[in-house]
Amino acid sequence: MKRKTGVDFWSKLFLVAIASIGYITVYSQQQKNAAQQKPNVIFIYADDLGYGDLSCYGATKIKTPNLDKLAAQGIRFTNGHCTSSTCTPSRYALMTGQYPWRKSGTGVLPGDAALIIPTDKTTLPKIFKNAGYTTGIVGKWHLGLGNEVAKSWNGVIKPGPNEVGFDYSFIFPATADRVPTVFIENHIVVALDTADPIAVDYKQKIGNEPTGKENPELLKLKATPGHGHENTIVNGIGRIGFMTGGKIARWTDEEMPLTFLQKAKEYIEFNKKPPFFLYYALTEPHVPRMPSTIFKGKSGLGLRGDAILQLDWAVGEIMKQVKAAGIEKNTIIIFSSDNGPVLDDGYLDGAVTQLNGHTPWGPLRGGKYSVLEAGTRVPFIVNWPGKLQSKVSDAMISQIDFIASFAKMFNQEVPASEAFDSENILDALLGKTNKGRTVLVEHSSGLAIIKDGWKYIEPNNGPANTNPKLTNIETGNLPTPQLYNLKDDIGEKNNLAEKYPEIIKELQDLLQQIKTKKTGEK
Ligand code: NG6
Ligand code: CA
Image (cartoon, rainbow, N blue to C red; front, top):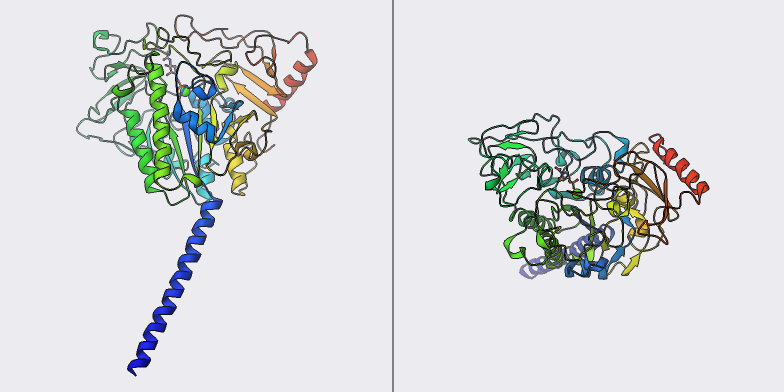
């Protein structure tokens, strides 16, 4: 009996052990398969970083070793684009897969704007969610919050990122230079104090806090005269818009990007069991440029250069975190920018006076606010260690294509009436081909279209230059047609419109077709 029981016990144990090993093997195999099939994706989005701002894109006056490494191990695109030359429209396209110029109200939003992304349509994070991913956003949002402009900031603020597909959100509402200067984590202002309620107004002054206009002596960063940054002073910096309350909740600019970095790292650590999609939207080098003390003065190019060094460091920290979490081989890191560069965007921060020969636009013409190439051709890097062959690609790609490309990766169908400007360029993104889009529309105050290296800029009556005393950027607006051959003339120096009327005609017709395209036509 005893012996029999013993045999029973041992054979049972044996069976359990075999079963467990089997289970563990099957389980880990499943995990492995899942891991192999569905990589984590981290999209790092810089704010106002130019084509020529990184050393891997030719900058010599500034060194960006972490991004250089990301590019050297991965694919560095020389013809990668955001859709528009400012923030909100580019982010709208990224989220919806639709050109922002199709919809009014998608221009640069104030800090109290209502949400402009539909909650019932396909969005980039929803593509990942449908594929079983957990999704998170950390950083700048700038796509509006709530259903109303006149909303309360002191309770649950929604709809917002959580309603358009992010399981987790830690954001600031608009831009670093717009009130309210607070973080919002999943609908609620971080460190909200009900005894000191927050109120925001973009039309008139509220409360009696000093403003940059009335009390310029209180400013640690002077606003450029005539610019819009002379309302409520927060942390010694005048902002766009008026704000009262939330004293404890307000960020300090020197610390704000570090808070985002910390949250992004925690998100990676917490969700390291694949798969996750993290949209990490940096604030650098957008104004006000006020990096941490350790970066101040480090670049020799003023605070804009220092902010770029901080940005590069943050990217390095994310790379380290991914490695430490043991998910390096199963994580795609994509890096890009939401529009081209600007020097004086409203504060006297040394960007102009200490430029020191740096060329944020690289070999391109124009910059932020411009339909010329520097407005929307931006740094674009894709990294997936061990999975991609490192190379430089001249495929024409756009951030608007993420939806269709990742939908392809997961074999998902996108309804024909949604994300219909998004094209599947997955093979180009992963470096399998140098062929990306064949046609791309660029957007600023005017529109341009590119096909086969030819770029046609529609005649536009807007000013040819932004205010020369402030941003001072060529917009690309001209009342007559412009045609450039980007293959030979990336700097858009020679307008060939008169020489090739037939190419103008073809591109005009094509642009017209795209403009009038009905939803659902692919
Ligand atoms: C402009 C601001 C500029 C910046 C920009 C938005 C003025 C005069 N200029 O209106 O400083 O905030 O909007 O930048 O106020 S973006 O990158 O978010 O599009
Ligand atoms: Ca921007």
